[in-house]
Length: 214
Image (cartoon, rainbow, N blue to C red; front, side):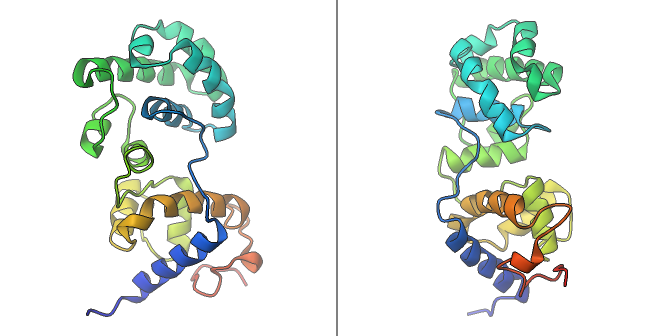
């Protein structure tokens, strides 16, 4: 058997440590269906998950499925999501996304990366999240800001490009662990490996981290 590289060993150690630290980590957005998750993730761009979770209950009460949202007036959607920021672009994308779901998929959310990224406003981060959390697809990597920052600090990736980070992490992480590992990175990035002032003194990965501050 081929001996794992130091980078692979570091990745597996990170998986193990964060699994123990955050055993129940899940997506921080509240949703009840693939459709709701798709909408919530689009709203979360440059917006906090907490704010999105405040907006979506009323939004989903008004537009409970793709058919309802596809028939919506964009201006009305804008008003309902205004507090999430970038509301004009997001409203336009959401209505177009719902219309495409109706036209191509009978109103149902598809379960492949390729089909999801063909929807208006849906990128690979969203597609990976939906495929992993809703459809249970192994090997997904949600390359959000926490994932990109922490993977770089740990020396697991050498790029800030989301697609490259996704590809590099796929090669290092066990497929059955990759999706939940990304959720754990979000928790870890918020309470320990903070963007501007990482708490290296309290970090359980400081002994393997090449970026640790002494």
